[in-house]
Image 1 (cartoon, rainbow, N blue to C red):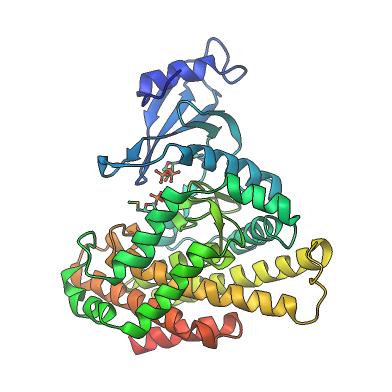
Image 2 (tube, protein in one colour; image 1 turned 120 degrees about the vertical axis):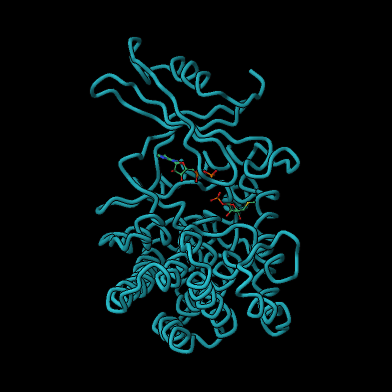
Length: 403
Ligand SMILES: Nc1ncnc2c1ncn2[C@@H]1O[C@H](COP(=O)(O)OP(=O)(O)O)[C@@H](O)[C@H]1O
Ligand SMILES: CSC[C@H]1O[C@H](OP(=O)(O)O)[C@H](O)[C@@H]1O
């Protein structure tokens, strides 16, 4: 069957034909629920009591929010499906299960996580997730370490890297994370009340040099298989559990990019509570929780990564004194730098985050946005001085006071 974009009804017909998924007498209904920038997502449910449900995710041959004037490879669906399968092998239960993949239709059939909610939404409502740091830190350590040269033979790793070559999606990141937000590009879209701060960023050559160096590492450092877009809109949570979705940007890149994405989005939420939470005590308590979470995510990542290194490293230099510490420090500095870039792109660039966008009053929103830009710049500029996660937390706290 050649590619065509499914309608809700066609999704039902397709679901009926997948062997062993639904019983013959299932009463299937389908609804398109996608809220992302790129793809269609169908929720398909057997309406009978105790009937089960599944998710279809279909890539379009273009960027959904823009239309067919911006073509985009369908191969991203293969990459997403293969990344989900691999992530489930490396860190069981951390992603939705893939039941079926159709190459022609660029269609992934996967586990329905409707009992979970998008983490970003919960964070805006000041919800707390006691297991999140442990679960995402473990996900990061296992997926990054186990796909790197530290754990794989160099031949196998290069074959894996070749199969996850993802030039078109990387190009989106190169442009929309690292380039356009730092130039006066027509794609940028920012609150007019922060124009002065944005213009100071555009004329800050020291900052742009550091962003250029981070971009270069993103383009050239194939350390591990990344998720590639690990923001809190790509993490679904319950009070107890965490699942990662949407790895269509997966490719071999610097480990710090994924860790930085998690940190950036916790900190964007931190900044957004300047607008969402008027009571200073409530705000400070929740912001403190977010900082503790940033710190714990890194600590869990580091502990798990050290254990994997000690128990499973194949690299002959792994036992060389100082190598593990130096490796982790480079990852921390990258994570801080990438977090900074990602914070700034979500304020200045094309794609914003609901955390800040849902602050209705432009002046209050500007307060949160200015704080996000301030933290973002510090993380990029000061990353070379960091010697541990406590330094990152101090840097953020100092930016908050200074703001
Ligand atoms: N496995 C799933 N279970 C339940 N809902 C899902 C699942 N995958 C995606 N969704 C829903 O669809 C939305 C868009 O999915 P996402 O993979 O982020 O698409 P895009 O690649 O277009 O950003 C998510 O925000 C979530 O609400
Ligand atoms: C024009 S693509 C912008 C942006 O969209 C992607 O996010 P998502 O798939 O979660 O909607 C990605 O972050 C891209 O940078």
